Length: 390
Image (cartoon, rainbow, N blue to C red; front, side, top):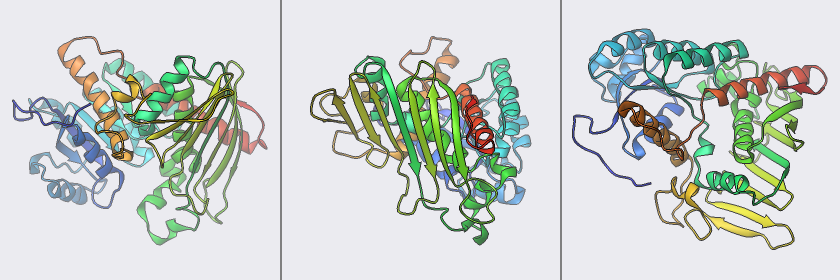
C-alpha cells in the first residue's frame, strides 16, 4: 500500500465524503478525517457535525467546507446531497451510539454508502432493522473495528486460516483502560458523559465501548463463531448506571473456549488491547500498544518474533503496510486501512466490476454480532453469570 496523491477531476479519483457528528470538541471525528485522508482516497465535502445546528455549521466552516454544505442537521444533509450532481458518495457516522440507526437509515435510503463507528446501534431490534435496510439499499456498509486493519492482526488471521496453529483451543482477549476510574462524567467531560449514559450508549458500558472491539478482534483472527457467554458485569464507580468492568467466559462453536476482560477502571492501563490464541500446533500473541510485533510459538520450539514488513510477514500484512519495517504504524493507520478497503469496494461498485477478494472490512454483520454479544452478556450478568446463547 502506497501513500500518494491523485489528480484529474476536481476530486481526482477521490470519493466525496460527508460526516455526521465529529465537530468541535469531538475526538473520534478528527480520527476519521485523518484516516480518510492518509491514502488520499477521500475528500470531505459536506457535514452535519453536531446535533446543535449552530455548532454544526460553525464546525463545518472551521474545516473549510462550502457554507452551503455545512448543514444544521443530518436530515437536511441527506436530502440535499442525494440531489446534487456532485453529492457525497459516502458518509462517516461518528455520533454517540443512539444516533447510529436513524442517521444510517437516512443516508442508506438516499443511496449513500455508510462508514459507521461502533457499536452498530443501541439494541438487537435496531440491528435487525438496519441489516435489512442495508440489504435493500444495495449500498456498502462498513463498521470501523479498526484493530482488524492492523497489518499484524491481518497476518495473524492468515496464519490461523493456513492451519499454522492447528485446531484452535483457547482464545484470550482483554482490553483494560483506566480513564473512567473516577466519575469523570460529572466533570462535564463529553466523551465520558455519553459513554456512561444508557440513553446514548445503550445497555453496555465498557462491554459495548471496548468489549466489542476485543470480541471482534478475537473472532476475526481466530475465525471462530461465538456460541454462548457467561458474564459478570460490574460497576465499581458509585452512581454510574453502566458497567465499567466486565469478565466474560466464552464458548465458541466447534468446542474452543475463551475469556474476555474489558475494563475502564484498571489503573495503570491506557489502551492495552491484547489477544492470545492457542491451538494444537502453536500459539500467537499480539498487543495493540506494540502493534508492529506478533509473537508466534510453534509447539515444542522457541518463541519467534514476526515484525510488520519484516522477514516472515506475509501478503495479508503487506497489503496494509505503508512504510519500511522499524518505522511504527499504529492506530491512525489501522483506521486508514479500513477506509482504504472501503474505498476499493466503492470504486468497484462505481465501475461495475468484481471486488478483489483480498479486500475486506467489518460489515453490518459484525455489528449485529456485536450487539448480540452485548445483550447476551448483560442478560447473563443479571442472571448471576449463567450461560446465555448468543
